[in-house]
Length: 149
Image (cartoon, rainbow, N blue to C red):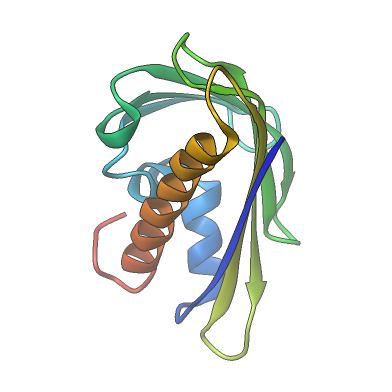
């Protein structure tokens, strides 16, 4: 099993960062550069999102369901329910949590766990690390006013 964890401090209001995780438009802004489009069914707990990927992920479709959603704790998780036939992660679960870190700042923690499908753990972790890097860069930019999100 692969576990990928990363945390970074963001000089932005924690509620703004949470909006980027918890809202449809926020998620679209946070996924630029590796997700070409994202459609949603519902909101919050139980929400299903269908993503069409691009870039280092190639062109495919991935479907995830929101399994935990706690607005007070600013934490959520998603599980892949359809890999689209080409995402090499079995039983993928991704977690995101926003932790206040003083006035006007927060820590964004990301964690993913999964079993690689027909590839090495090192190669699979590299894909996940690239996703995290792009996601965190997008969140930081959007949260600090660098992109309309």
